[in-house]
Image 1: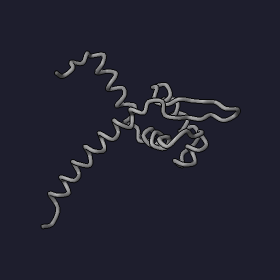
Image 2: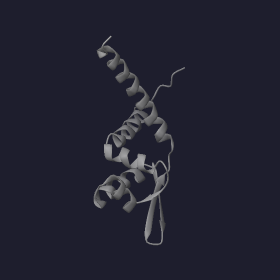
Image 3: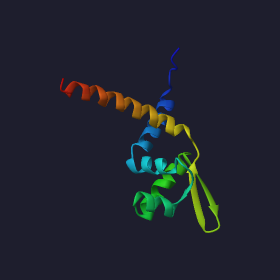
Image 4: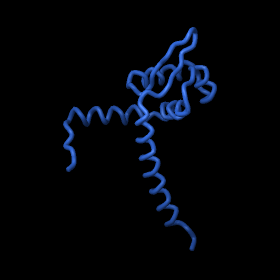
Amino acid sequence: MKKRLTTEAMELIAERFRLLAEPMRLRILHALRDGELTVTDITRELEIGQPNASKHLRILLDAGLLRRDQRGNSVFYSIADESIFELCEVVCDSLGERFQKQAEIFAIA
């Protein structure tokens, strides 16, 4: 039996998708997939400025997707909600299937 979602639930789901609609946030999440990083590590790896990284990290932190751990002068970020990667894999698999079917249409026999 399918769940019927309330309007409030749909708003929360839409907010999660809006959060993930920003490519830089997806890049940050992907960078953190293998373990915690500092802001400096993230800016270096993604070749972005510190203010831009900090803005996106704050949004992801406020959404509960990241955790922040301060040790001395360094702040480390890590993934707080691993389920985000399941969602990304579902989307990637769906896109892969779609593009495979399109490629087959244009394949020369």
